[in-house]
Length: 124
Image (tube, rainbow, N blue to C red):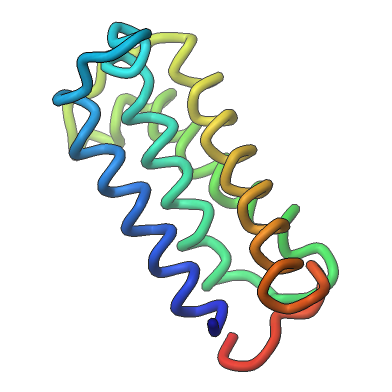
């Protein structure tokens, strides 16, 4: 599967997580409702950042850094005045966790689909 298609599916998975978090009623529902959106959006932003960065050897670090900067600045600057945002220091941790999960999924999927994490493969 071409990385572009796979990354788009992961972005959609992050969006689905954001939209579905309010409907979750299982164990840890409070944490999912409070921070699931942060982790889901951060997950999606990581895969969007991959499209903006070089697909070289350090692509995971570049995409992770760019995504982390975007979501953390969004938190600190109260949604850039575009959205209502309630600051919670744990949001920063949830953002980092979503990006860490995305980076892990990215490395795993690159190895699984391409054989190596540092080679984007055809269609990147």
